[in-house]
Structure formats: C-alpha cells, structure tokens
Length: 64
Image (cartoon, rainbow, N blue to C red):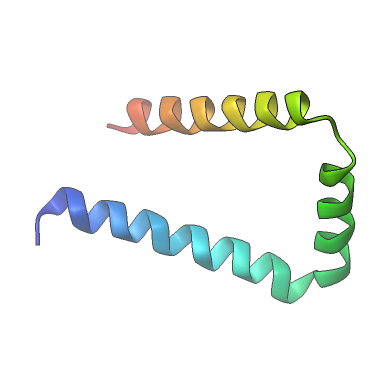
C-alpha cells in the first residue's frame, strides 16, 4: 500500500475515533449540539462547513 493511501486511511480512522468517542462519552451534549445545528439557517451551516474544510485543507498543506 502506498504511503499516501496509508496516511489517508489513518486520517479517516482518527476522524472515526474522535467523533465516535465524543458520542460515546457525551451523548447528551452531542444531541443538544445537533439540535442547535438543525436550528441554524442552511446558509450558515454551509459557511461553517466550508470554513472548516478550508481550515483542514490549510492545516494539511502546512504540515506537508
């Protein structure tokens, strides 16, 4: 397996570990967070998602 694919799969695995851990450790808090997100306008959710994706891309670019 190539180093790039290994790194990608490791990153995806870490996302699952972190997100799953949050749901396992703080289910009530995560439920309230989801309810708050659902109450937001679609444009705001899209803007926050785009900002998070760009911040992640910048972080990956800086690390490499």
